[in-house]
Length: 437
Image (cartoon, rainbow, N blue to C red; front, side, top):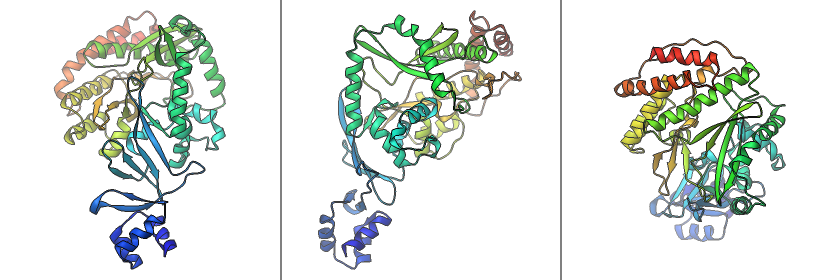
């Protein structure tokens, strides 16, 4: 009878009523059988209770603690993640003591997956895990394998598993107790060398469209740790390098423009050294105490709550209707979306807009990032192609704020058109947009 119980639960989680009917046994007998099987867990409470069979993943077990790092770098238990048959995961929340069954990785852990340019770097470096080198081919078990070993370096305040938690503690010690402080001047002097390391490592592999090479590092000054993401151009002696240099400066100016008009945006700085242009971005999901802020992308939020992949303005409207975001954040998203359209940003995908995530899983809009005129980016083959300069129209949802944000865009294009570090060719493009505003 016991093997039959296990076989039933191996197919899917089931309620007590379903199990007693299929096994033709009483509730007390079922309770006794369940107690004899430590691999069986209860999900939910009262009438919503279901039973499930734990599913071991490789040699890593079937359940793991998930810790939360706060802004002061203190660690607390957020919950428990349990893999079950035939697939899926149970989230047991430490705060509410509630269980939630997910078919895949829970939405609030979705962004810890390695992805983009840096994600491919990690997957290549950590091949000892025996994972497929192609990130797009990873299944949930592969992602969990990575998170349990290296999730502590990812953009989240969650740490999955004991090993990841211990690695984070070691990272704190290594950063805050170095042989000598790496101040801003010393760090920036190393950018050329860091870029060469990335290029040497990546030269044999093609880069996915839209991915900008970058590296991450810490700056330690006066016992404060600043965590940076640094994008960089190819050598600016090439046409491709000059265009990416223009775009990185344009991104810096876009972030400054948004800040000027009251929209939170990432703090950035332009550094030109070693024949390249570097865009230095201070990570807003980290604190100078090596603490962290919870953050989730629009992609994760949209997949969980909306179910459609329309433009930012329509997704924001759906989130407002569901009560997931405030009216203030909704208006900010409309303005940022309008601004992006007006500055020829054709890469406003769901990974380029994020929210801070509170302990109760409520959302608030995070600072803007990756805002630049991507219409004029070189092709994936490095060719600079002439693009038509054309006006854009307001969408139905952005119509009320279009005139206001057009003023922002006009100010932005004027700055680009007069910036001394931007090429004459790109300044001419900016001047045409400014006249069109």
